[in-house]
Image 1: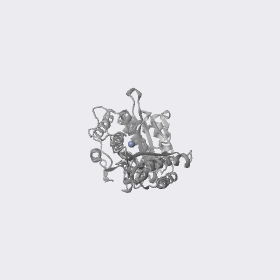
Image 2: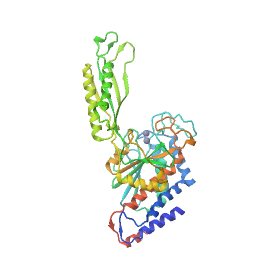
Image 3: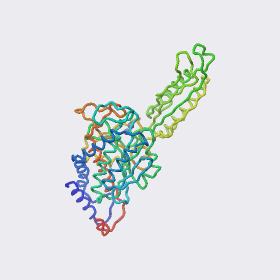
Image 4: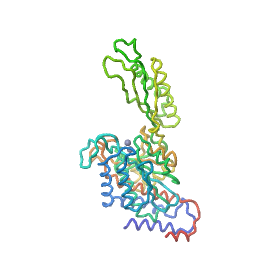
Amino acid sequence: MGSSKLLSLLVTLYLLAPTSISSDVSLSPEELTQIPVKFLDFAKKPEIFYWMVNIRRKIHENPELGFQEFETSKLIRAELDQMGIPYKFPVAVTGVVGYIGTGQPPFVALRADMDALAMEESVEWEHKSKVPGKMHACGHDAHVAMLLGAAKMLQVFRHEIKGTIVLVFQPAEEGGGGAKKMLDAGALENVEAIFGLHVSSLFPVGSVASRPGPTLAAGGFFEAVINGKGGHAAIPQHTIDPIVAASNVIVSLQHLVSREADPLDSQVLTVAKFEGGGAFNIIPDSVTIGGTFRAFSEESIIQLKQRIEEVVMKQASVQRCNATVTFDDKSFYPVTVNNKNLHEHFQKVAADMLGIQNIKENRPLMGTEDFSFFAEAIPGYFYYLGMNDETKGKFEAGHSPYFRVNEDALPYGAALHASLATRYLLENQPKTTLASGSLHDEL
Ligand SMILES: [Zn+2]
Ligand SMILES: [Zn+2]
């Protein structure tokens, strides 16, 4: 096919370059520019597009929560088997790590998360979730389909890939820290850069958005139990009222961001849970509160965590209560920081594919992503793939029961994955002088 021929030509030209291979590859800028264009053309071919759509819909119908993505993982492996792509499994329970290319360095990774959310789908359509109480409301079904789409295209050009592209299908992004488990299991061994994307209804289909540096917050969850002494609501003097104590704790917690944090250093502390009492005339023994805290630097998040504990304990004691505070370490995610060099790479590749006018800069978000664990370990880059299209109705934000994916975005995601990795390898070859003989052997 045309695109295959073009890539063959480009890479052949490149391989025939006689001596030093460095970041100054022998492909001309125009030739490099063509790679993302051709991948997008390829991804838009009906046979690739509908194949991705079908995969996405199949996963959408059978959503699975974190570390339970057994069927999703099975489907991914079946597709990789069919394509002849070798992989490691299981990695972190349900995770799959595939490999395309020479098996030699450099290694560059592409990531997709696989898990769904514990919520009921409210969208009435043919491929609605068939599992009560579970829904792909964050688009991870589309993420899997796009990474498989990229794999399908890359496998066609596998002999022309100048290194190894690592496909990371990870479990449990939604609070389970699946990325951390994948990392601990060695999923990124030898990998020097990783790219990840997320669908977004904030940007139009055919556009992308990102920023260099911190892009998503660090965050965690806490729970505090405030213990008093229950009794009759009309005889408070014989009780130690944990409801009043917990109320004061919550008000004091609000001062941490408003009075102690630098106003220019974004932070959030939300108490989202308050459980205590069950009757109008009984003061309960205890109250449980809980919530989330977010910040954009490691320093700030550590400080916030420490102060939450102090404020809960001390403020509770003012009201004669005892308190315990627990932090859910499993759901603690670091700041997602986009590597500056990868930002430049992304801007070039995405502009070649979509045009500079479709590369948007997004503001940092207080949301969290466990991609941060990958980007903490090696240079990483996380970007948003636009999917908004006003002619197709309103696309709700993630985690809404009315969340829909605009499947027209799938070819863009697949082509961006494939292009970012292919170009990364072409433009980041080790700076060693290879004998032209060995290059010819590869041909
Ligand atoms: Zn989500
Ligand atoms: Zn998500």
